[in-house]
Amino acid sequence: MLKKFRTIIMVFIDLVLINSALYLAVMARFNWQLGAGEKSAYLFLIPWVSIIRLALFYKFGLHQWAFRYASIHEAVNIFKATTIGTLLVILVTFLKQYGYLGHSLAIGRAIAIIDYFICFFLISGSRFLPRLLVKVKEEKRYKSLKRVLIIGAGSAGEIVARELTGSKRIYQLAGFIDDDPFKKNLVIHGIKILGTREDIAKVVEQHRIEEIIIAIPSAPGKVIRDIISHCQRIEAKFKIIPGLHKILAGEVDIKHIREVGPDDLLGRETVRINTAEIKPFLQGKTVLITGAGGTIGAELCRQIAKFNPRRLILYEHNENDTYFLEIELKTKYPSLEFKTIIGDIKDIGLLKHVFSKYRPGVMFHSAAHKHVPLMENNPASAVKNNVIGTRNLVYAAEHYGVESFVLISTDKAVNPTSVMGASKRIAEMLLQAKSKNSRTKFMAVRFGNVIGSSGSVVPVFKRQIEGRGPVTVTHPEVRRFFMTIEEAAQLVIQAGAIGKGGEIFILDMGEQIKIVDLAKNLITLSGLELDKDISIKFIGLRPGEKLYEEPLHNAERDTATKHNKIYITQPDDFDPKILRRDIKRLERLANIMAEDEIIKKMKEIVPTFRNDQQNF
Image 1: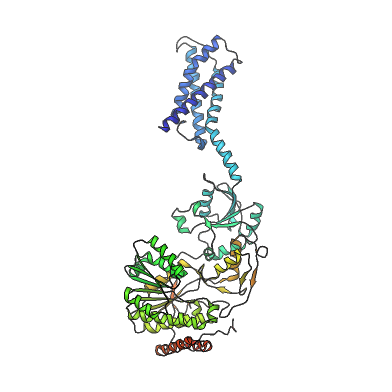
Image 2: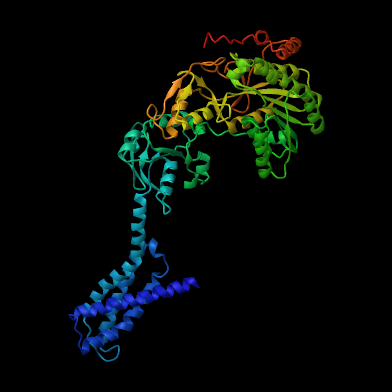
């Protein structure tokens, strides 16, 4: 109904314009003075011109398209309709002059020619004026939009540019940056490639760039960090598009462009886990996660819930974090059974109750004291929680028939220089010792820092940046391995699924990243200028810290698994009986708070433990 009404209105407007053009043509031909003959000619032409032109307008679909989107195609159709109409009008005047349409009447051919130009102008104006008004409005709005520079002129950059310059324009695209020298000065969607990565700062200043969109989904973290480093003295904000798999799936949209975050600085490839192996490992099982409220524990819960376990047991001493995690999981997985246990892994009575009542089939032990400087000052707490707590869980798991037990370990257990690292190495040895004669498959997974976790340096840097600094870094050359939370959790689950018992799995974490570079990049991403808005202060290595972590795996010694990011380290040779005796002695020392003796005993158990800092 609305469409019919719109068509009637358009036909009426066209009729008015057609007759206006004819009237002006007749008046112009006769110097704005009409005699009796001229009036007769005019009145004769009115119905013929109206019918011919309206019929041709209908034929060429001039009433069927939206005026605000009028294009060259519509202009061509207007030209055809008016031209053919004028030729037919001339034919009618010829026939009338020679009496083929009633009595003869002389009508000047000039009227038809003048009418042609006026009609074409009026009809074209009626169609294109709305678009012109919209265009003026858009241009006015366009000038007020944020000026944007796209880094990357490949297929992803082209998709983003097309979105940015589309009808729902929300940015003013100023240009591209691309490192391919052959692309310089090329034009994509009317937008020029202005230079390479080295020219970013200059281009931003010259073109008054307010935002930079990184459109290189396949770029490694090193490239992203280098791009950010070239922008450390500019005020533009950074955004980034999703990964390549989302682009190929056609999911890229303006709404998917987001702020650059710490995870993007790693630029790691997307982890592909083998769901065929993981599904039988978790589906239908009761799964217990200790430290469920922590960063890794919570992500393990999220990932495990996807595989439909029978029950998920969240074991945690921090009630606040666990409370909100439970709400999140129940909202996302309403049909999955959850049980939250608030308690300590050192509470043997509670452990007996939980294991006997729920009989978990799979365990992920994430609970631990992880802060290196704090554990240096509290070695008894490190032993009680990381060693004795793990021993309690190991004994409970074996006694109550747990199928698989996965310990979340750390790269700091490799030739440890801290109490925390040594305590985690002893926990690994506990599992290896017990696996020699147990039906439970005990295994450990080592990895480095998880970027963005509650215990990592990133939240500390963010708080310092929010407070305008200074940002504190221990040493200008300190380096660390980093991994994203999601990636770490997925690989831990994958390692648990392929484990046979007794293994220490090592996750391939790529290259080490300088902490000072990470700090600089986070400052830049926050829109601040180093040494102007905020400074970096070096405070020296803290007790137990290394200048850089040792490689997690030895390519000549460790065994690669069928998953290209997981390795198995060769076990150390130790006597399980002596280990059990030493741990009992360590427990007694922790109970009486004999800190010096604790350190001495840990060095006996872990011969590679050195905490004197002299080599770091």
